[in-house]
Length: 398
Image: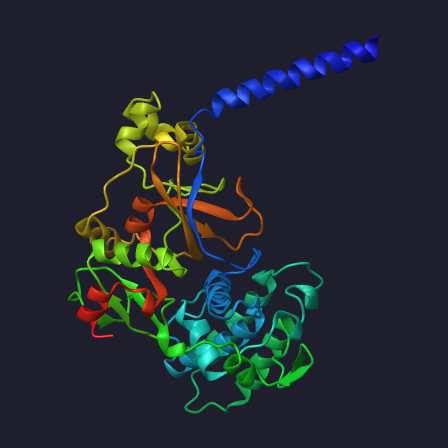
């Protein structure tokens, strides 16, 4: 009898909790997919600053899938190994007057594919396995790399030898694995360059797009952020045309390698992203401004989460984008893959975005990010030039 009562009590409690959850989640978005392009599986960058690597290789995997129908798992460690050596060489050449860090841009994997090639994931050790971890953990790795590179770059000698590269390559290989000179894939032998050539991609098809007013529109410039260290050029479009490129790409079956700012309160760990209008939001959440400002970020986020799809958003403008870029609010702190479009129960449109944090959040590694959020927080993105509307391509001359 006690067991029955206990089970009954648990059932009542569960029902109550479920009812409470249902009540609390009444504003939770319910999504209907409008357009979904094919992508490869979700990966986990774990404790490494390699979103640029994971998101862009995911982008090229989607490009291959669209063009050939074949699914590939390309190796992030190969790209990281080549990229970090190149970046260290630049830092040393400039005597340390630039940054050596884990970050990068979507151009780095493209440069690697063009100049060094690529290998499949299983041609190198699984991420983290060389140092007894199940996933990437760059804490120890970069605690060695950063002072090593700095010691060479800031050396007071009038001449340095090239042996520092041998030592650095040893560190890279110890933590990432040595890049193979040859490997076998599906019964055929390849070099990294011949494998890249076999993927069916034209690497000249890829361009990057941005939107700022400190350079003329319809011209190309190197976006001035530290992780854009190779200084590739991005085409500068007005904000509305930048967004047209994304929409047209999705509708035509293409994906976008997106880089932008996810440090804003509107980007949640649950898998949603809104360009929140904080003044309107604090009013809707039943909080006066004085109390709102005293709340911790977590407390504000919880209140905003309760608003769900009713969160009020700002209207992104060209001026606002420029101001946020110039005052350091708009940063390039994350890379992701935009691959689709969805609508919530109120008709608001969201981009479907693949992350590289494993199956995190309510949507198992997928984020739903509003068009306002993307317009307000994009640093730049890579896209196939054939996905750009013809009238915009004509203006760019590509």
